[in-house]
Image 1 (cartoon, rainbow, N blue to C red):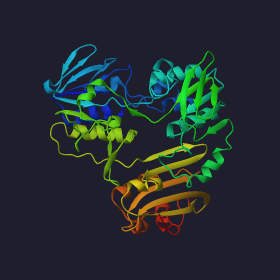
Image 2: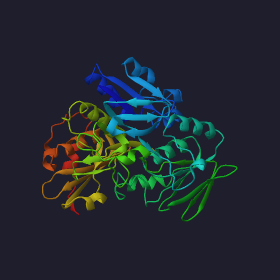
Image 3: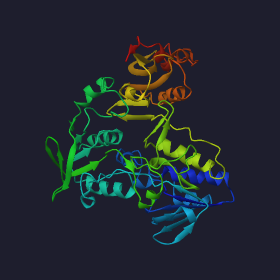
Image 4: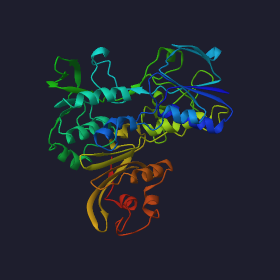
Length: 436
């Protein structure tokens, strides 16, 4: 079997490695249009924070590592056309036949709505863009960041710590709106407004970005911001390709796939940020461009190449991060998502200590189905590192655990590491539920 994978990021690489394990006799080719594969999207921030010795260390996989697994890698080669009926693709260099084709070209942070591409401000999602941004950062005193989602907030966290003056622009009324309810973030947002070198502009849509002789000018609905650099961290979207037009697409331009990640074209699969992900909560699909979803969908596609027998289970939109001294984590639905859930929900909130000997407060919120008591979502906030706890809560949601089951779950006790009630038990006991 000849397997051709278009795209060398998380989805494509995980698919290639899994396919090599499953089909040792197969020929596997990964085609990547850039000069590198496997760049970590937040690698630039890790380097600027001193957690990596160089930007060259910000790769989770390299061409050489794949070649050691007998996986061919072709860099700086671009797919031009796709002919599914003849199992053929045309690149800018050659014609390639395939038995199975996996589309894993990922997503883009570029906002073509805001400005012509030749005036685009900086992004840092790939190695080349991150290198360019770092080169200009040394002489920059001020930076405007467009978008206060996770990527924008993490960039603001790093850049303010470096002493840069940061203007953070967001069209919604508060940051991280995809993952957290605004009232839940109150302790964090209260301190965020006091962060030195950070100016927030909320509920201000960006309407234009222009390069100037000295930097960038960002036009919002209310003001003009002038800075040395601009960074766009707007919501990523599927990377469009003319060849995809012959496949069935969703209205957001993601590629339609069946439960086994095969597209409308036989023997053509799609993974990662090109597709919608099934949500076991809403029982519908939605766009969730997260690394974990890309990795898992790549593995799932590989397992279905020879025979379609392992449906992709979807995901919950689980995230965790550290920002301005706070740890924030979320999984499943938020209270704001209740309009997408057909049944009534209730909400439980709580505050607990990090451990019996550490009084650092942990704030938590659970979203629960009113009739069944099934846990549908969870949010955590603390200055104590609780990020691993969200994975357990995500697993509980996947298993359709109820509040009473979570309260009875067996966890170890040790005063150095837990309170009398372990965090997940405490969340289930919580305060009185509020009907929504």
